Length: 383
Image (cartoon, rainbow, N blue to C red; front, side):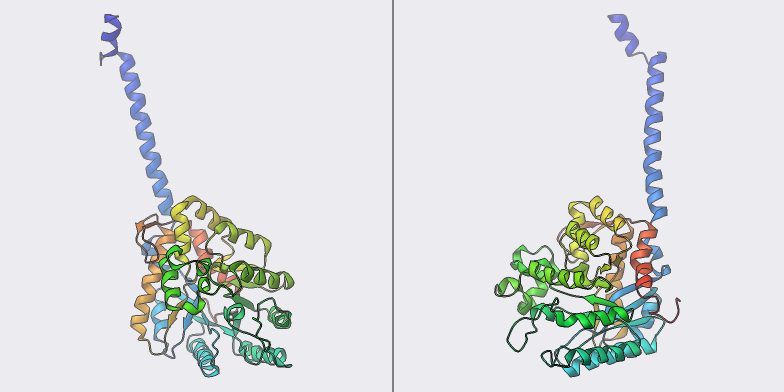
């Protein structure tokens, strides 16, 4: 026994050297593997330094000013835009929004494309559908590449009998067929985030809490007489099922921002549909904090169906440099999330988030290629 113990502790014994050498080789291999994996991630993903070098499209912006300065500043960041003229109940306000949207397109046709909307006034008139089709033809002639429908349909607009008008009302179908025939896209902000039907203290992200605190008229938890979240989504799905040739972009992750599982089911059911990320990054980050690999897998599977957008709005009297600085903060934060593995704070959540470090090929689809595919003639040049 003494001989065996002595041999086991004898560092000159050949067995000890052999075991030590194998241990060192193993440690060296593990370190090299970790370094190689980190290096591979860095090589396959864009860095923060790449931000301005990569061509990008914000597919959901509201540039409501006549000043072209913001767009020209954003050129240095590599951005082009789909500028959405959202609906307004005020005819004067709606005309202004469209006028400024087309002005931005005229000033920077290589940078700004327009998504129009249509007025809902006169819904009960016998010739309303014909008037709207003529209205949209005028917008398309001026360069509109998409048409947006808004949450007023399903949450505000009522007919002469005081019934809430939903997006699956058959009266819309001739308009949607016309949009499809013209080869442009329908962008739909229909319903609201699911948090809208929860009390403020149960909402998952701060931006929803702030919005519905300030806009109680749209906080459906306070209005149980209104359609439920499920009814809003069902109306949209009924409309899409009746219009399978209509290219559809679900704004704000299609109002299915709360569950990538449910969003995947929606995309599987409607192959003509895509979604944008506008104003719902916090909900995606909330889910990646719970299961980062699952979110990466979702973005990988549906990489051809997701468009980057912010919902950033620039007021008519905004100072271009100030607006650009605010937009750039959002753009850089989102870029950091998609492209790096950094941990950092975001305004929507209390907890820090960790970036996804997506491959360059996926990022280029989300940030540019998918929008270019959906809007092939949106910008006069590709510069």
